[in-house]
Image 1: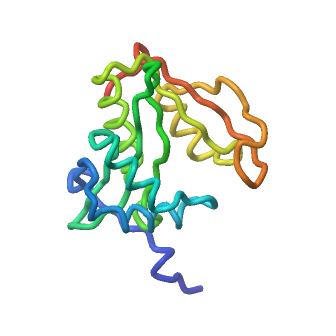
Image 2: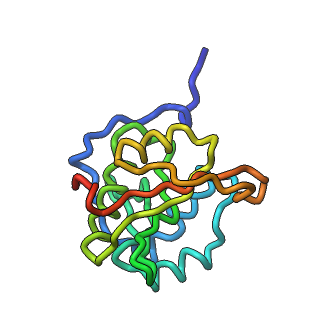
Length: 166
């Protein structure tokens, strides 16, 4: 049985991955990762507005000059830090990149005054739910029909005082 190049996962040392604020020239790579990762991809305009309004919490993971993951997070006026979207290029999953992005986003949100961090996740996305639970997030409620295809979401929450740090 042959394995296509798309199915082969790259094993890379996390120490060679740089996490940095996103730049305008990163948006096409971020959109590519978004489209390959989610059934409902955000349009380009959302990324551009998010970048303009949240330049210190829209982060990318870069390896060998290529964007291989991203996280979009922001601080709401009620001091909830919110993870809007996070994804890693399929070829680089399993290397700790998603964890590194999530940890950096949480650190930055707490440094800006977030009292807690919230996010929504599909109830069927068991892998993501396990990642969030490892970080200390807890399911707070189920949001019926949250996604346009009718799937429910869990709203998960991490109080800032329970964050162990990256």
